[in-house]
Length: 544
Image (cartoon, rainbow, N blue to C red; front, side):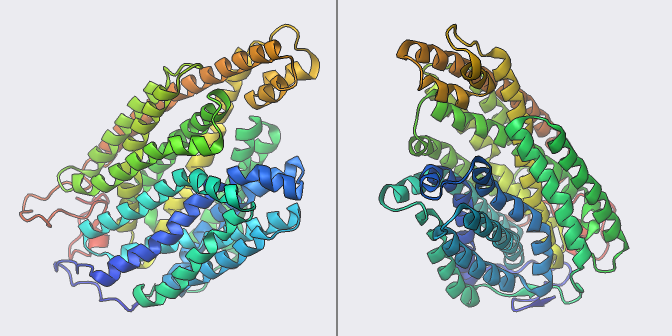
């Protein structure tokens, strides 16, 4: 492995502490993390302004929203491995340049088709950033406690940016045109390009070999159809086209795995999955993100379609939950110095389950305070997941494979979000359609629109006489809230079960050794014997 940083310590030696340069590097790496999480939420606000300017069709609007996430998810594995081969700092800088250029193109798009293409390119460019930032953090911070703090900062930036997106977007759209939400990324990337060579070291695996092009094609053919099918299911329910896309992606996934097993230098090193803590955590992350995304979808929908808040107002109401998740992520590394990581994450998931149960008692009228309370509790409970789980993944992989490990963590999260939206969106939609009562006097296409979705009911209500429109709104809001409360109960059960699995499966990870005496002697959460480079590794894949 090539590196400008200090070499790995010899077996038995204490890991080298990070200095001022590494912490300055962390500040630089926080910039793209914050930007990407902002980008994922800010476009919702810009959509009405964008539609007025470019006049996209309904299908084009969906592609404008989705193609960025499709391409980013599809290229995460490739870009994580590419960084291991050509250098993580180099890939980060190439990606930052591409993000800045494609952001400018998106901001000044003159047609819906141009915006779709530029959003797709922006997704590919963004896929270079997340694995590179995580891998560099893992390389720069060798001390377990320092690395835990650094990844907690990284996770806090990601969580905070998601909630700040509507707030920042609202301010920009108040004074500028819709393209300003894309230009936001340009100065951030310029700062990154200037500062990266000064404070970020370079790391790469000299023996990684060349990128296998067929493996790249197979990875895309596996990931993209599955993500597409799940998103279509979230939008329209289970349909043959969506099911076929998922099945097609799974089939290509099998071919991808078979090819990796035959290659000397695979695109994805399947040996990473031999570490039980690593594999277990990917599953836990998928399930946790599924529940979070399902609840997030219905909570934000309640704020706007039931409580009648604007996107900007809804964004402001989400700030307390984001702050609590940041607080929890910041506290988590301190907790694992005294408790196993499984207990901390599992206990947080149990608290999240309590928050979801609070949401189950939300009323369609005046239920906003209870909604915010439950949302804050659930976000506080899930706060440690990003910090501790990501640290576990990065620590479990050998340093030369940290880019691949980081990309798998991000991909698992993307799948979890897509699965949660599909599963819980379909559940809530079905419950809404079964519960909504169309008032007498609403017939034909209007009645069908009311039965189809709450969005359709809101549109129909605006075209009806005031009294009849009020009845439609009341029925739709009551049915939507019923769907929210049912989804919250299911998510509470799933979060509680995931918490129990986490405590059980990771019970030995992060436990203190009997000989530990000093404040810095606690083992690396998630580290396994191979990663610690002990002379005589223990057979158990889960580290002490």
